Image (cartoon, rainbow, N blue to C red):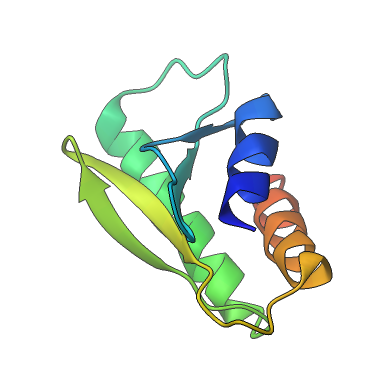
Length: 100
């Protein structure tokens, strides 16, 4: 499912993957193609996105820094996780990003 999510992120106009996803960990961030702000502002917006996603109470994500930039971590490790679970995470990320 990590590979599937990685592909969805790569195909999205306003998100980007931050590292390879050989297993079930996908590191991504919201990064609109027309972004004109600086990296500190983008980091702050990604932390706000993470806060909003977690506040929904349906999924829980964490963050890290990769190459000095905030990255949202989606860890898919439960063997019972299915495609609808991964879709729920992806849909929640996109819905909350649209409110930023």
